[in-house]
Image: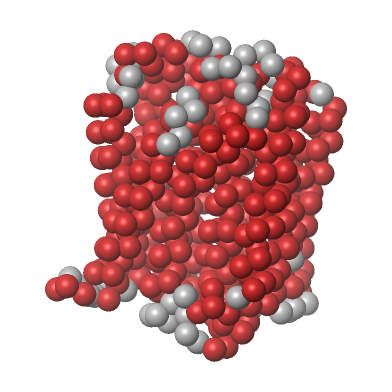
Length: 443
């Protein structure tokens, strides 16, 4: 692959990733929209259960991000036959990790959540959600393997089709299982979780079928399931563990943030869950560009084009910033209409509008800061990004605690910590990229 950092090529790679990233986020949005018709408790429990699940799954996504960087580097070096062994060992590791995390969710989550959640109704609702959602972790991790492969070799169009399959399956099953339509049992919040787990299973089947029958498996030596290579696994873990812990801390931080919000009451938690769903949907274009930045930086370095790395990150940042300005116009023009998709409660709509304005500001900081952050990650300096994450999330949570628990400020002011978090991440990433120290990482 030739080194190409044109705006056209960046967008060509990013667009399918953006569509692909809709999968997990669209499930959250669909679940929230349906649960908003059930009540505030269902909304709150769905938020906490979903965030707890995502925090755990982020360990797998973090490993997948590291593998994506490694595959991208080998793809840039044209060492295609090495990629299959990397994919094999990713399966080995993630399926074992999925089993461990499934047992953690199933057996340890009840005691852990009891310590954090104040409302009994929300506590039991969260456990109901996790009881069905936990089974999806096996299929989610399989999907992570395939996503890392396709993004790493810059064949991102396939993610568009996998997303459509995930979203349609989830929406149809939500309709039947949450409300008991079509002769199905009325499962409420448990139905939303089960629908998402089944959607991930269907997507995993699609990935296996598509890759086996239509991909050039000989070129990459896929599905050979070679014998375990401890040296390769150590290299993969060295690159991926900082990203695993970074992603886990990031979403654990968000989970704790919602625990803090829960102490402001069920209403504040319901408002935050609605806005979280909107926030995550609006983040999708930025996440897609960040993921593209990650793999394109890795591919570019693999080709030895070090001088193109900073210009590449700059161009992706510009695209991300301009795209975000366009997206948040929807929040400014018709905030009430957007929120009414999730609830018809007038007080929820009114208070959610205030939070929606705050997250619109946060998205502007996010659009540039996270591209630079993922650029640092793409260079292979994953330990550096982990340190940045520890510092930023610590300041984030301490400030949120002071605002919500100590001063009892309205929920929209607590959400301002999102802006502060991205300012810290962006500043640290900018300083590191400008220093040139990123050039010395070897993977």
